[in-house]
Image (cartoon, rainbow, N blue to C red; front, side):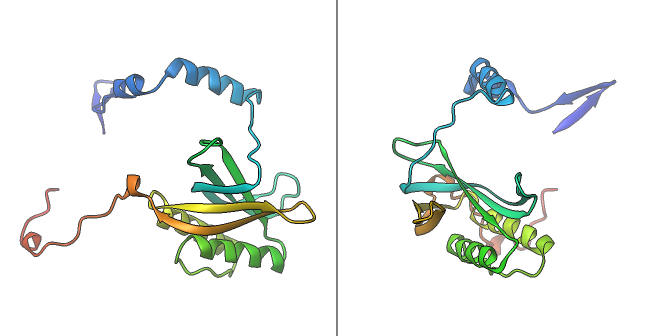
Length: 180
């Protein structure tokens, strides 16, 4: 929340708590590495991993400019904990759309259908919103005979660390005034 004092904008939030929680000096060094593209990327080998969905969105492929659904999985345990696995589905043909639709259906119970790219982009946002902080997955990451990556969700786990649920309605609250 922000307030104004004269020409100054003042924050009521105590940002010093972040300085106590996170190592700002190392973060600044890491940022320089990322900006200069000099950081070390670890290639996660094929295998079975416990992951969550870090990012899910519709983008343009960097190489072809074609529409592409991209999903970033963050590995949650084991030797590759914290590393990313990237699933990309180019959506310029019926096979790419079909593979992506099947993949999306394995993430949540949000109905998946392609009508247009603008609708599909919103669908990916809806799915990410439906699963964010609620589910982790057992991902089988493999490659086929031609070297193409395959991503199969084998299990869905309720994320016990992030079970932020809205409070349920209570009849006793029915006659109370809203506090705002």
